[in-house]
Image (cartoon, rainbow, N blue to C red):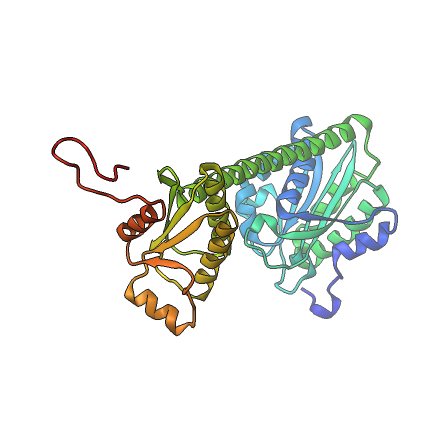
Length: 365
């Protein structure tokens, strides 16, 4: 076995130089490379074509998923040569295994070369070695060609590698190769291959389209949920004619503050309300930002002619406001909702009285 100084350069680079600029490379994921490789191999399987196949998937672990496929190919092909970082789990008599050194350039490449009586093809991808979360999303710079002269050149390179690693099987593979000189693809087989590629493309398109539809549906459900939560989170409750209640629960951010103002102003306009009670008993934190939001809502409500009563300001909240320098001197505030309702009735000139025994009421609401 030779040392690194005599090791051949990248197979992908040699193919690229041989066909450039006629055939530009394209970027393919590992999943797409599997589809392309299976397309070429399926043409052999479907038509039971005697053939010679050279293939490499970088690491020996990748072969375990392909064992059954290559056993089926081995019953049809004249010879299969597998290049990997270890020994593929396929009986030795069914293939020629070439175990590559860790530093060999072929370890960074994915390739399939097919020789038959009716067509030849070579697929080669160079690993971009980019970190990905999903192995199937790993990307390769890829070339697929059916040019006999390019295939011939690639075979020469691979044969040199076989002679270096497996001189005991090189003569056998050389003889098999001579039985299938590279030739341009005949119409029916090229049509099958192109048709299969189109099927793969359509299947991927359908999958992506379905994912997009599901994502759109999910986004629509999310928007509906957010709208429902917004409506439930900012309820405007008519207590009686001319009086509205806006109970606030939970934290208040800028987006929710905008909804609060919109709901409050809409309720005042629709109900022709004279008084609106904003109860903040359920707001856990009342800071400068929350207070500013409330003051904006109060000022906007005043422009519509409604008086605002702010309730639920406990001692700790009041102390926080004092420390923050927030002045609510011009805002009617009450300690709790009951006091706020009483104040709202007072604005309207009403009050709550105990019902008399005779059935009449004083100051009846």
